[in-house]
Length: 322
Image 1 (cartoon, rainbow, N blue to C red):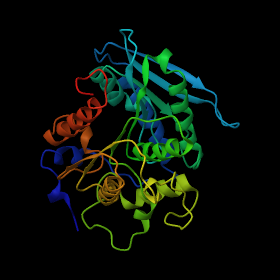
Image 2 (cartoon, rainbow, N blue to C red):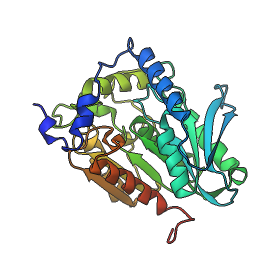
Image 3 (cartoon, one colour):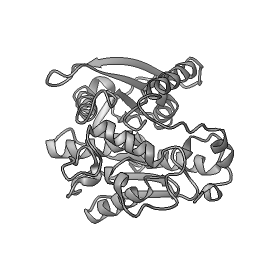
């Protein structure tokens, strides 16, 4: 069944312009290179924001390679800012801090905060737990050097989109269970949380037609796990929806469109967080497909971006009432 008629009318022009190549190991290198080249080209253009960007190489843990992070911060020196560890999306397969600059630079400026964007190792070259441990290394570094970064360690949270949001949710579980660093919030845009979506026997008939399909989802999870999705022994830190206990996690904001493949797993995760006593704000966007919030003109996309920033401001010590 085609779900095109369910797409928000303002999003339909964008959808018609996007290419939907089958995602597999053969096309992956070219897709990575194309996206990174486009991101570097965009980064060379002045967006007018008064921000600094610096790169740091953090020693890896237990013999792992160094982890590159990009720190985006307001030019004005200030202590006690909110800190955000940003984890990019890309199905565990693609992405980089450079490709996320439109989001991270806007967030650093709008929130007057410090964003640390982590360049974790990608799959299938590096499988779980490598990418997640890279994110933990970046988070631990951020907490350790909070003073030098101008960050209040009590106001550090995680933010991500898609697979990056799935890693952020897994990182929140890992930080909880390791006892540190403490997180103030989770900001999750259509998080990739559950490998069992790949093998569900009664899939939602209106989700997953556009952008991130069921076929892409299978490839992403196989690449990350190094095993068939849906098995009994998948670790909860790899797929946060696998966790039996969600208590003790930081407050979460979750945003997802009704046509997104991750709709059902996001709704279920939000329900379980609520039942575990975790404060949750959930925004569901009718007619939104995976990645819809990137549309520069559609009202639904603007609302999603505004909702996300509003959710961040609630944990920002620089904002009244935080």
